[in-house]
Image (tube, rainbow, N blue to C red; front, side):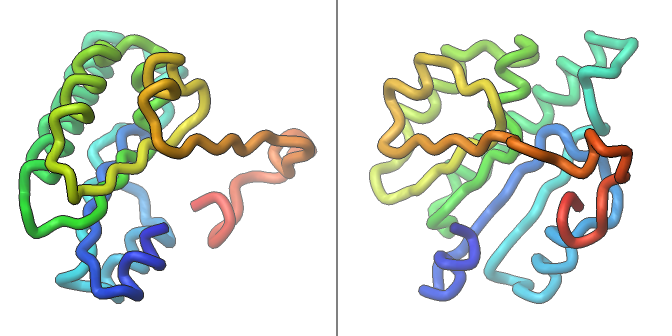
Length: 151
């Protein structure tokens, strides 16, 4: 969706809630589209392995504040909230807080929320919902995450 929007001259903002600040293909792509796409990687890695829930909640709050900032900025046409559903599943942010922000966003802003386990309330208000499900994955066969495919 980001590349479609960029192809039509739209400005894209993305907040990554879970991914840590490791070199990724997403970051490389954003550098190629400087000025038309902004990426904010504000997670600290896979929070389900955490030993510090309070820290995870704090980090999710920082990412959420950046999300609100992008959604309120009239220069953005599309805002992608990457892995926000995971944040909601682990109760790092209240679902109702997200619902309120999305229902009060400006009419011409497109917002995409990604991640597994989308809450029912979010699915009910969405214009579009898709599901990607794993049938077979290299990780389950002992193959580590691969450059260009998983990061």
